[in-house]
Amino acid sequence: MDPKSVERWITTGRTPHRGHRWKAASLLGVDEVYIWPSVEKQAEKASTSELITYYPHRGAVPAPLWSSLIEKATDQVDILVYAGLFLFDSNPDLPDQLAEKAKAGAQVRILLGDPDAEAVLQRGEEEGIGNDLAARARITRRYLEPAMSTPGVEVRLHDTILYNSIYRFDEDVLVNPHVLGAPAGQNPVMHFRYLPGARTFRHYMRSFDYAWERGRAA
Image (cartoon, rainbow, N blue to C red; front, top):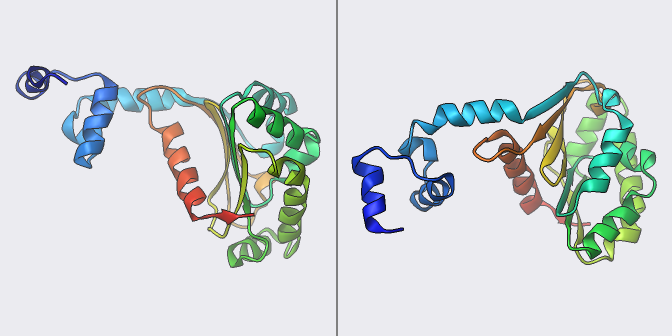
């Protein structure tokens, strides 16, 4: 940036373009709101607008929505689950679709629960299904095997305590919170769509990235 432009940010209270705000905040290691408090209300409004729909339980999510999001994704597919078997059972061609998308240039990242991890065993007990959750994770991995040899499709196992299942398709993300004592399918689902300047979509994807870095090759 031209030094005089930066000087105007400081001396006149001018708010720079969001791209410059994010870069400056990243360089300084602070949140952009710390430097430009006026953007907080803008971000809050945008973040609220990111929520497209709320579903009272996962079964209420229309099947055509899953199919549509999968079909339309061209750049990024990210899935963070313990098992997510329902998605592959209801979309039997999904592994082939993921492979084709990767061949066309998309990045596909899938995080499954490590069947031998304590967190997966504990979650199975909390859901009242015991070792069945670990078994479901193994089945999902088996379904994915045909796609795993395709460059651009990467599957990792994680042993984290999972607070939400995350299903990201380009700029849409479905978030399925985990409620203690209830299977994931009985818990709500929130559908968010990315908006520039908002934080909710990016907040969940930072969580995904954190889990991704902690995962290991399947």
